[in-house]
Length: 144
Image (cartoon, rainbow, N blue to C red; front, top):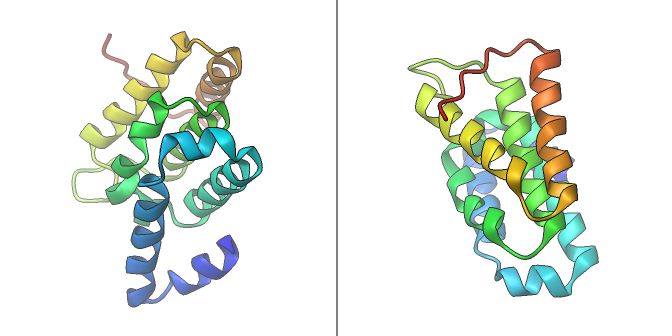
């Protein structure tokens, strides 16, 4: 499914399809994500694959996913953190591009906040993303 959306996103009308899909997933009720573990894992995996292929199209709509970082589903929290990590790894920071310094700083602040998450798997995921960023030598400036 992610490949189909990725191929479709190459066309100008496909970009709106990516944003619509991400908004629809972001509007899911967090209680539903806790009850349907298999579906949640599939959605999280789909979002990560989409952010890998279409990072530049995900930046404007990533705010739809951020409320799920405070949700009950650990699987979806890890998925949203992975989406943030993929965008940070793949997109250069520039004033005129999709990844502005404000967007980058906001994403980094979410990653830092989840270093203190109540669930160990989320803390590990956040640390893993910071390790990936360090491995590709992304300049990290974290304002604490």
